[in-house]
Amino acid sequence: MFGMQCMIGRLLSCSKYTRCTSTVFRKPVIVTTEIQHRTTQTQHKEDALTTADERLVQRLYEGVVAKKRASLAEAITLVESVSRKKRALAEVLLTDILGYLRKKEQQNDGKPTSFRAGLTGPPGAGKSSFIECFGKYLTGMGHKVAVLAVDPSSSSTGGSLLGDKTRMIELSRDMNAYIRPSPTSGNMGGVTRSTNEAILLCEAAGYDVVLVETVGVGQSEYAVADMVDMFVLLIPPGGGDELQGIKKGIVEMADLIVVNKADGDLYIPAKQIQTEYISAVKLLRKKSRNWNPQVLKASSKKKDGLPEVWDVMTEFYKTMVTTGEMKNRRAVQHKIWMWNHIKDNILKLFKNHPAVKPQIASLESKVAKAVITPGLAADVLLNEFVKSTQTDDKSKS
Ligand SMILES: Nc1nc2c(ncn2[C@@H]2O[C@H](COP(=O)(O)OP(=O)(O)OP(=O)(O)O)[C@@H](O)[C@H]2O)c(=O)[nH]1
Ligand SMILES: [Mg+2]
Image 1 (cartoon, rainbow, N blue to C red):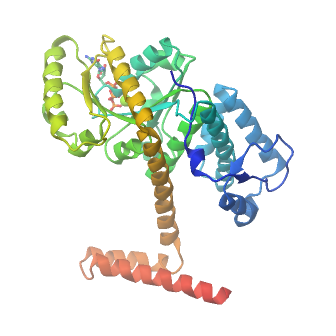
Image 2 (cartoon, rainbow, N blue to C red; image 1 turned 90 degrees about the horizontal axis):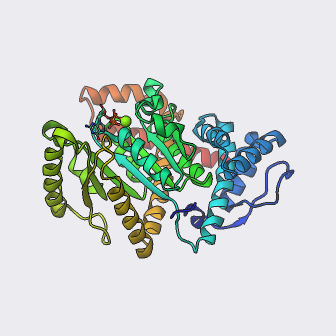
Image 3 (spheres, helix red, strand yellow; image 1 turned 90 degrees about the vertical axis):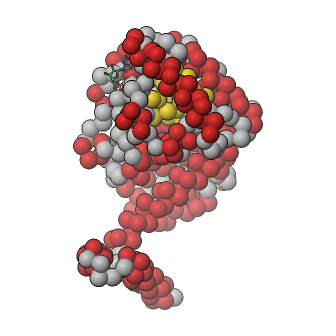
């Protein structure tokens, strides 16, 4: 049903892209903004691409669009890199990839043909087991499925829970599936950014269904909700504490709720929970004008309920595309990504600014001891920052 697609290109105004250095390879298929053009030309002169860099980007681009798994893996590693030089290369590659995806979308009457679904749920809800059998079900129908994870804790522990792939043994052997653990470097912002970019790379490599699993609890659900078309909440039939722990906000974000583990002794409790949630979602604030959240039950163990889940996903996709909501959601998401990235970086710049950095420790300590208010401390730092940037401007003019 789905081909490859991306909306980001539409946000960019097109102008011909010229490389900093060589133009040794391929015709200029790349389009980019004036800003990017200037940035590449001036701001990061030290990052100017060498011929070897150009060749690397070309090799990765060609490998990804030729659907080579090794190239996809290498390209994702590049976008996950925190090294400034590699980030610059990743931006060139991603700009090429956006151009490619935009062309694909135009060939598909401007309709998005990839489908991004996020799967969240309390620890142990059965997310990985569900992705394993649902992924197999989809590849069995001829889809190409990419599985990504957002695990903010992996940057501190150095490993992702998805990394061991223990719950996805069959899917990880499937040539029509690609499983990628969460990036293990960077903060939450870094993890989110590289997952967003990995989604684009997977789509360019021909994966028409992208499943993103959240690992751990906390911010990752919100981050994933901003990177997918459909947000799916998986809940176990346990009830009690586990369900109490699911925040109302998360339930409100869900386009589909799946009560998992509906098998054996858990079948009856699963049915009860399903009925409760069917009533509950009617009382919640509606996320979409065009879609009423659905509540299904499934069992990964028995492989039950998978076609029903896919039917609802397909119906959701069609509704979102025909009403234009999919395009709007993606457009809004792209703006959110941009501002999140700016927020992350501005904060980093601010904290390291020479006018601010030396004062942070003492002001933090005064705030902690309630000697001054947090608001005043923030104003002091902000004033120092603004004053020093104004001085910089004056000395330049
Ligand atoms: N009975 C039953 N057990 C299941 C089913 N799916 C998963 N489980 C069990 O639930 C446990 C947790 O499964 P996972 O797939 O690892 O759950 P998860 O949500 O990915 O867990 P985390 O990533 O650790 O949050 C395992 O012991 C599974 O065997 C199911 O459909 N039925
Ligand atoms: Mg898991």
